[in-house]
Length: 189
Image (cartoon, rainbow, N blue to C red):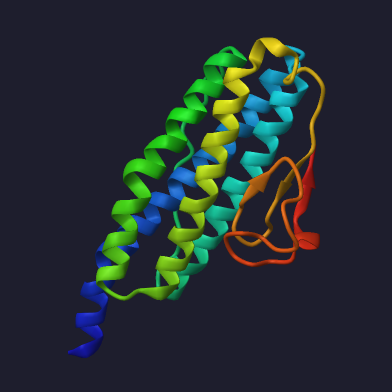
């Protein structure tokens, strides 16, 4: 009886994790495609940003997948067709997607996981939320400076290999989200 009760309690958390896994998997594919478009338009800095955030989204998907497996299920995702537009349109679309995750999706999923004291799910969801905040900020900055030349030359970004936190500069000795040593960050250009 207790096993059934635990399973029922985790049902919504599992559904949320699956939705997050699919969303992050699609974001990874979308941003990888957007990076190709940005390179083709000569906006190599924007392409670098899309590559870095694509990698971060892949890290989120992997973290969600581990939590899903801990709940006894297998992660599944359907990758939707990608329609890359101009780099400016792609940056705005990416920023909008990140804002949705920050303002709606992740807070709701976190509340539910906290309500059932599901620590594995909670950690995965909280790490993703914090990283998405950096992504939204970086996309907003890119949109704001599109005409300034910032996006033309390739740029270097640092992505935490544990939680996906993304930065353009080393900020401290450790990741501000998950405490991973900065030297273990991935460098993506």
